[in-house]
Image (tube, rainbow, N blue to C red; front, side, top):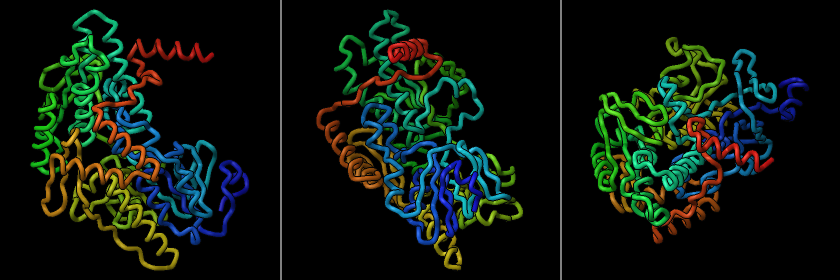
Length: 456
C-alpha cells in the first residue's frame, strides 16, 4: 500500500486487503459502501461533509417545512456498521490514475480500486452574474441561506416605505421547471397563501409574485406530458406565473433579464436550471463528455471513450457518471434511483471481482418519477404509462420519500413535521438563525458583521 508518511497524513491503517476508496457520501456512495463485503476489502469513504443529504427534500428546508438535521444523516453512523471501514472528512484535490493515488487536503492516499461518487454541482452555463446573485438549492448550506433570505425579504418589507421596493422584495423568480423548480414554487405559494398573511398582517402578501421560468415548452420536461400539464395547472391555480420557452440571460441581484426582452424586478432568483458533474482533476478530455465522466456498462471510467479504453481500477457512479444505456442514449436520468442502483450493482461487481468472477453489465430499472406541487397536489409517472396525480399522487410521493430517508429518527421527524403542517397550515421553522451570506445583499452583510462583533 502506501508508505508510513502517507498513512500518517490521513491516518488510514495498513492492510493486507485491497483498498477501495469511495469519494462522495451521496446516494450512490452510501449504497456502494453498504453492499461491499468488508471481508474482501478495506473501505475508505471520503467526503467534504460528515453527513449524507437527502437532496429531494432540500427545498422543504429552504421554505421552512423541515429542519436540516431531519434530512441529513451522519456518515459515521453508516460506516460504524461495517468493520475495517473508515471515514475522513476532507476534500480530494486531484487523482493520479497512473500512480493510483489521491491528493487530498490532508495528504495523499493510494488505492487499489477507486469509485468516484461526487454527484453534481450547479451549472450556471458560464453566467457569472447569475452565479454571484442567484440562490441554488443543492446543499444544506444552500437551503439554509435561501430560508434566511426569504424571511429577511419580508422583515425588510415591514421596515421600508417604498411600495416599489416592497414589490421587488416580495417577488421571487425560480429558473428551471424540473422537479426542484416546481417544488420550490409550490412551497413558496403555500407560504404566500397560508402562512405569511398570519405573520405579516400589515403587509399586502397578496402582492407577492412567484414566477417560474423554463427554457423548454413545458413544465417537468423529464416527465410525461400529462404530468407536466397537471403540474402547470396546479401551479397556476396556486398563483404562480409560469413562463415557458424563455431563457434567463442575466440577473444583477435586482433585475431578472429574459431573452424575450422582458425584465422582472425581483429581490430573489432561485436557480434550478441545470447541473453538471462534480469532476476532480486528473482526467483528460477523452474521459469527459457532457461535463461528466464517461463510463462503460460496468461503470469503469474511460481513458479514451472513442477507443473504448477504460481504467481498470477507476469507477464512477451517479450524477458524475455519463453512461449511454440502450434505453437512454443521452445518458441515464439524474435521479437518486440511478445512483442507488449503480452503487448496489457496482458493489456486487467488486465483490465478484474479488472472487475472480466476471462483472455484470448495469441495467437501469425505471421505478418511477415523482414531483409534488403542494398539499394534495403531486404527479407520479411509473413504467407502463401509469400516471397518478392529485391526492393519490401526493400520497405516493410522501410514502416513497419517507422510505428512502436514512434512519428511523429522520423518518419519524419528517412524518411528524408533515402531519403538523398539514393539519395546522403552518411552517414552524420560520427562523433566521443565520443571515443570508449573499455579498450582493447589503442588509445581510450588515447583519453578518453585527453578529460577528457580538460573538467577539
